[in-house]
Image (cartoon, rainbow, N blue to C red; front, side, top):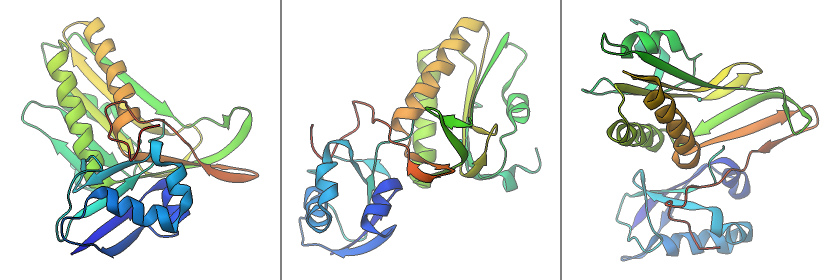
Amino acid sequence: MRVKVLFFGMLKDIVGSAEEQLNVAEGAQLENIFDHYAGRFPRLREMASSIVLARNHEFSPVSAEVSEGDEVAFLPPVSGGSTSAQLQYTHEIDDAAGHFFALTRQPIDTRAIITRLVKGEDGAVITFEGVVRNNNKGRRTLYLDYECYEPMAIKMLAEIGREIAGSFAIGRISMVHRLGRMEIGETSVAVIVTAAHRKAAFDAALEGINRLKRLVPIWKKEYFVDGEVWVEGEWDRSAPLASQP
């Protein structure tokens, strides 16, 4: 069987490739694919307790079997992103309940998102924006670069948003992340919530950004005057790791 294997963030640097085609035996599991690459690149074995594997855009345990043509992804810890809408968003989901989820390589227009979300029954709109700061622990930052596993990321944004909408007394929620290069002061991610009352909106927005940071496969590379580094984050406890620590 032949499968496609994808690598993201710092794992892409370790392997030296973003994508490979791999021949595997019938009945092979994700564990066999991980062992294959860990044998070639021992650093992957060292990082096994922080790597998550996905099959066909879904988190998957290492025991999952693969089939001909499957897409397997090695995911490092996530970093803790109008009429012109078709041009602005590379991926978007605008569902029947009025929630909106998107990935974009252009500046995030939070006012336009609020306009599409807010209804007459709403008494509160909460907007959280994550912005690029000019330093990391005192080390001067020049700019950031975000990349992600786009088909899986947009799906995860929608899943998280819908779960939050079902758990809090809110009207609608939007989660939008920007990709590519971002300068100091630019918005990298926005979570916007409308509700009849402010407390539910505040609580839902906080839950939204916290879960996004732990579950959505998006990675951040930080560029400094004296070098560059992938920012290491941490997976949510529910994510299936390649091995337990």
